[in-house]
Image 1 (spheres, protein in one colour):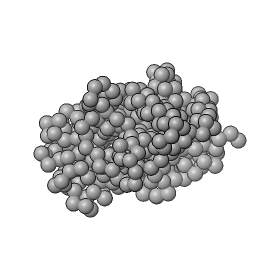
Image 2 (cartoon, rainbow, N blue to C red; image 1 turned 180 degrees about the vertical axis):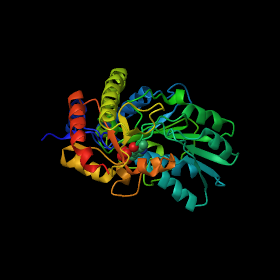
Image 3 (cartoon, rainbow, N blue to C red; image 1 turned 90 degrees about the horizontal axis):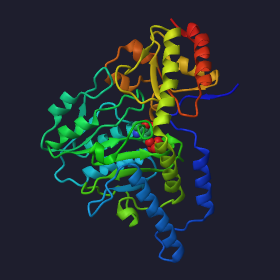
Image 4 (cartoon, rainbow, N blue to C red; image 1 turned 90 degrees about the vertical axis):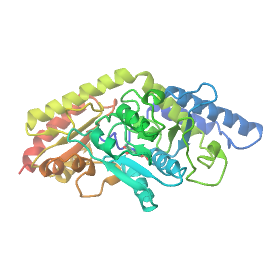
Length: 383
Ligand code: PLP
């Protein structure tokens, strides 16, 4: 039995070409880029060229004295923590912090830490189509609001959020905006300057890069206070010896996937359509969560009302299909997904929802096989 991997929003398989670069970079034996000798200087040069390349690929402003910058982190979680904790720590007195109800736990939990520290944390309501409620955001914003964090696209439903509108609303109050673009990069156009946000989080392992590296893009002038302490690396914003091969491999994966983005999106859309049409053919009562909204092409959150999601996920697992019942960071929990609950979906929809997340390494044959497996499993699980 061959395993079919439809859990790419949790992590993607590394692209062989990226793996090759990663191994070659390790073999090169790059030295500590903070060392002052020739070998250290060579590593520094390579690391800084990589940083510039990533900034360029993602549309950072690299002109003149007001340059945006990329700070390398261990991944999306750390980038989100640096954004929330680091930006908020730059403000005294504390003020209001606004996040949406559908953020990844790395945003939600960092915000809760800030709330315990005296920040006035407010949560934006979610509409039943999976988008944030902009009217509610408008009513929450005040002149004490220091930061708003809204993800670019949701990891569970794939619903793309109206970031341009968020930025426009926040500008009226001089409020900074952070967006978590971890799931969006490579699956929709992402241009830091065009988005107009002040900080943006990334992670390499969601687009066929290595796990253990991500970045926070920071707009020139956006205040960020370090969260970690202990060195001058990365302008003191993220101290610790830089693992040069990881950003180098990250840069390669961005090059590969941004260069072929349109073709990849089109391939993913075909697979998404095949999967969702196949499911509706089998189970007409199925609900594709956020179906009427603009969604990422690799994500289908499908509910089978009357079917228990845990039982379905386990039955699929036994049949060799990997998918999930929500964010990998929240898995293990038997509670329904907070994202679907925030959308106000009925209990039979939240209880029966499974996330299939595909990648360009998946094939129409695999989608056909999953539909076939579902056709055998669903009649056994339906009440
Ligand atoms: N943000 C979103 C939207 C995610 O989906 C994830 C991972 O699932 C993260 C952040 C965390 O990224 P990482 O696994 O690189 O820490």
